Image (cartoon, rainbow, N blue to C red; front, side):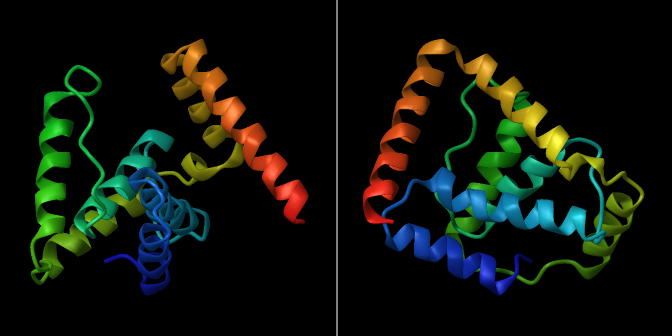
Length: 152
């Protein structure tokens, strides 16, 4: 179950009209914090991000599943399940299953949340998106920085 602060931050993002991916970012951040503080590990940065996104969908963030061909069919189906689960009222989680998942993740490493591996993952994801998309994001970031400079 996500921490109360994470849920509140995500709800605040939703109230402010921010995109679902921004709301989901709060859950991914929480996951990275858990790995860093040693609560559990992850096999890879990709897995850590996937866990965060899954929690976000289950918590009711309207984040669409990845498009066909972007990931495996099983991942897409899991994302669809999480999304529909998030739209229904919460049911009690299986304690036995939660413990099993937690113990399996505790056996994994903690370098998945390191700054180096996060940076590597971000660069890799950006490279896959293409130069036009990167340019668009860079322009948006520059506009955001400009706005902050005039307010600060």
